[in-house]
Length: 117
Image (cartoon, rainbow, N blue to C red; front, side, top):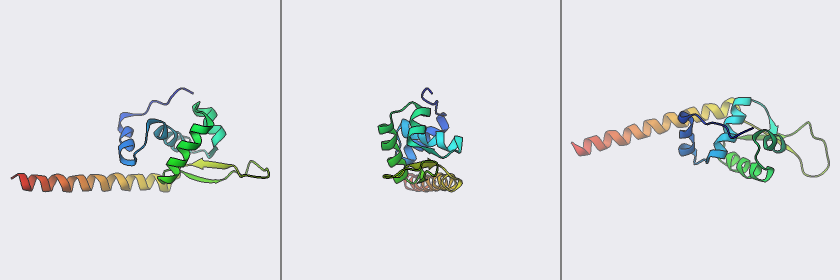
């Protein structure tokens, strides 16, 4: 798969959460597919190396934009395999974050108008 075209409106998420293009691409891919995919599957579908995928996943997970759980499909000894996904709670949180950002920006702008007058 070629690099996903990210709609201009969604590029604002890069600013809000401090994401780069690839992190946003992975987030949007998982949000759109609604699948739970492991790192190897993401690597294959997005044509990004597994090492890079793991780095991006860690950042997205730390920012609360991605969830993980043990991959029940893979049964082996040793280190567990995880699947990654975006659920409705994350989407709701993003909506709240955007609303809060807009509210705060409006307050700052309103204060600036008062001090300018």
